[in-house]
Length: 121
Image 1 (cartoon, helix red, strand yellow):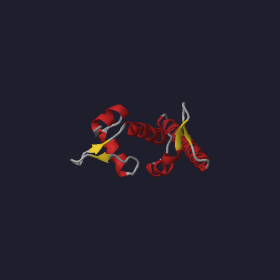
Image 2 (tube, one colour):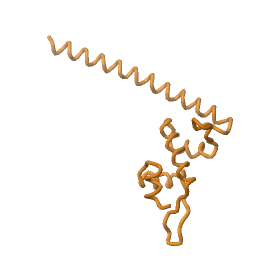
Image 3 (cartoon, rainbow, N blue to C red):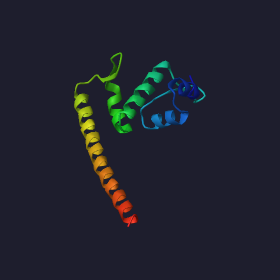
Image 4 (cartoon, rainbow, N blue to C red):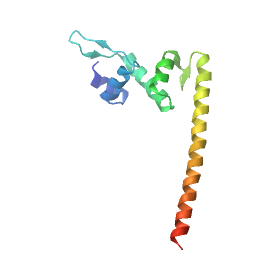
């Protein structure tokens, strides 16, 4: 199938597919005329890429983890045991970012409150 058909089936833009290809996440075949040629397997690959990106992973991490991911019927799961530790590390990193954002939000709330109090004088 051509890139437009894959984009429709996978629910992404052709631009996203070209980006995934550029990052080495997706490797289409080529027709004799040089056009990209995707298979049904690419639809599943794009679905997996989207899940991993939605989980907060960057494309370098997705590239590294994608070959070891399996579908357990309900979720995408790491098929290689060492990936569990990688996902746990990533979750801790996100938890740290959430805590930092909470602190930033609290500081901003204080500034807003002080500004309102100053304006009310």
